[in-house]
Length: 324
Image 1: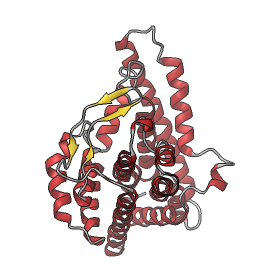
Image 2 (image 1 turned 60 degrees about the vertical axis):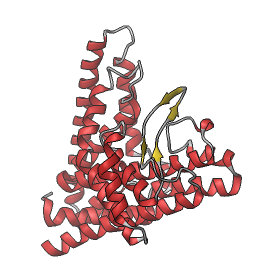
Image 3 (image 1 turned 45 degrees about the vertical axis):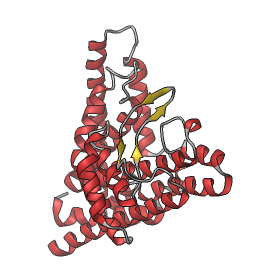
Image 4 (image 1 turned 90 degrees about the horizontal axis):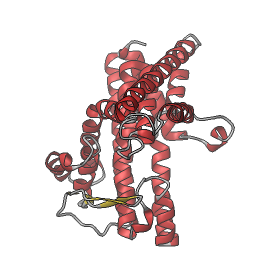
């Protein structure tokens, strides 16, 4: 596909379809999700190649080779699927429909909303159970405010990883670009940890994921700040906190949308957290903000995210109309 204007129409279809339908269980109970395909390949390669008895330098090389194989498979699969779909009548629509599967607006909203619902209806026990489905930290260490802050942080971070970054690479390189991004992002979530098992083998996946998210993360922060104005919040604090505190985050990218959300909602996010049995002593983003977050703050964050998704759609639609 060429970038303009055909790709814009395809991406707009993907955004609208995902917002309206998301990932319907009736489909994915019967068919494996593409992310599950990527995950299966990543796991099969890791089990075969990441042997603990091998030297760390050799495991790093093998991790790089496994990542290259994953990228080639995703690139080839995306190219062949796009070529086949675009040959059909209304190929732009079918290509957008396929792309919607790898965008996560609706599913992110629904999963995070369940945390707010559980806190309101079941208290801390239900909130911990619900938040464990969307974050990697130990939920048993979280009080109600910690559960709410974790849900808000994942809303901001996954708006970048699950919405803006897929759209960014979809716009630039069509389905092949989208497939490669999702494959690399899945690899980072599975093997990109700095644990003894994955520190060497997953190094290449983590670094490539960081590289692919450099632009989208910063764009996500700007969209969140602009969305604050659309829901009655001031965008100024979101921008100021983002520019001041984003670099304090241990991730080179996650701090941008999280700091923007922290400033927009007047909350202190990130800070010390426990993953498994390990305590991570990170600084707070917007340290002067409130720490007593609750279900209402989760819903406010979701409102900001929805507004940011709509703003992204409007930008894509506006460009498509301007260049039609």
